[in-house]
Length: 344
DNA sequence: AAACCATGCAACCGCCAGTAG
DNA sequence: CCTACTGGCGGTTGCATGGTT
Image (cartoon, rainbow, N blue to C red):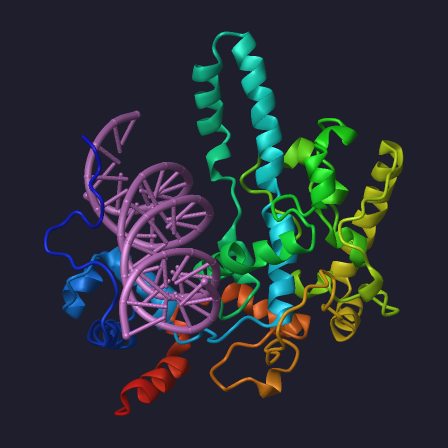
């Protein structure tokens, strides 16, 4: 028995939302919260499926959304996060090819590959826009995804950077062969080359298949990657240059970096200093039209805008207060509703 | 002015994990 | 334990808009 699509139900409207529909949904959620999405269309008098309502709320109606174009800092952050969160996709594919090769030889590759695919959860690996969006308050995963696909990818290509691997295109075109089959962690995590202290690279051997694993991407992570570049050398940084190291050197460096990183995370003073010194621009050296800076000047943002957390203390609550939760946005809700309909 | 093209964005689709019955 | 439902996510599509010929 196949499962029915949530939009299978008859007479459900699809396509663009009308202002009336928006108003109905906004009113309903403002008043009652979203609760069970599947019941919302009926309660709110909408001819939509719950999924569509949820999407509309998350991507458009949510009061904590930041409008307008992305700032330079946001774009840089997206690129950096993409390099970290998106790259597992590459590593996984390397392993997939290995598995395919092995199982072809064993004549059971189809069955076993399918089995492994399911058991190890390979299909879950992809670029995690939602995690990237979580580091950009007020931005949705959809918005970031669109920005990446329509804009940032091209900019990186124009700069000679492969948007998938975040390596120089020349290196990618020459193949990964120069370093053997072993994925180059350094190359896949360009942040390491520009910032200090760098995060410990993911330990592929033990973590790459683990759905629970993620790089050190706690809520306090984002700005820290940018926070400690000193000496104004960012502009002179060349994209994607990979230092050649022996494996031993890499291992030693990883251990050392991990120690530093742990100390760094555990030391609020270091983190605060890093945040104050952050100079995020120019890591990717991309020419972008000047935009009002949302991130670096919280006082200039509108009262309804989310801000970029400037201290760890400010950041941490974000971890525990998901933006999606309408219950915590009461004030914003009222403000938005009042602004939208002018009668509250 | 009309046709064509490129771009950006909103929304849909399909899949997956978690969970209640 | 099994099934169906729900919410969440990423990839893709299609439309609206603006620019170019």
